[in-house]
Image (cartoon, rainbow, N blue to C red; front, top):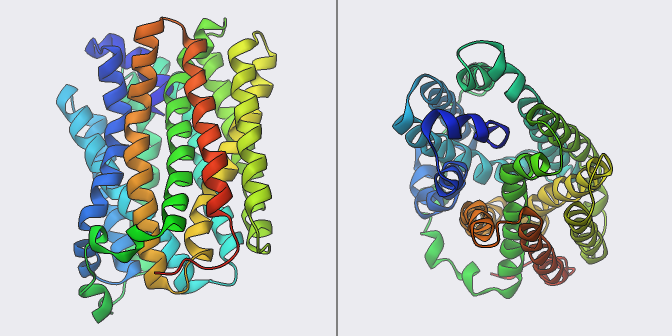
Length: 367
């Protein structure tokens, strides 16, 4: 929801383009940094217990950011990023432990729920901000309430006495894992990184780009929310279909090409048709996200291997994603043309296409 609120936050806190990019990237940067200590985080307990603690921390971070000032906006965005990072790392492991055979459906469903909630947050952000004098703080209230509810559900429903297994407790640092010597693992990580870079860059700057295309701030928020909602729904069943295929390369190539074409059309076109291109672009992004998570499940042979592949791909991917909005902002500062910044997205789509060719090959990763 930060993307649509950037024009408001810019005025309230006198934020520069670089500061806005840092604000949107700080949580994502935390996703990457947490990979360095995930083997320590696993000592806190089982997968359910770690997810529960993360949900509690997320609700605390969201509430604190909502009621804080300038520095709190950045500090608690980092706290939010830390909690989401652990959840992101552990959910594929949870799927492998609890529903390995249904991994495609489960991954598609939870990714779709993320997209639906995200689209609702984007759609409601600006209207809520304009509703009262609480401005952007009111926009963040629904997410805070939702996170608190989720934390309570996990506290009462998934509370366990079981501790982490001995293998997890003695888990080695991800940086020393032989996985880093596998070209296929790097391909999975790069695919995840490209889709993350495109998603966070467009989520940050598309509302601003739409303003230059004649949209109002509210119209831009609704357009992005609608595209996000449709894209997330489209992503429910595709991972299941992909999990039934030995060779994922044709599907990965198709969604990459759709993404490149859609954002090229946004750069070249104007008027209401842009909403159609935005929908196509978001469909490709919201299909590639669960597919990149599914690769961590299908390319590994055990929950322990899934954990390491998930941490590796997401740490590298989110590090790249954290700097992507900043890079896009810098490109605008140099060119003063938002259409030219979308060339950056097209290049990422091409790199995703190439990495998907290697990541989607049949067979398990050997490590």
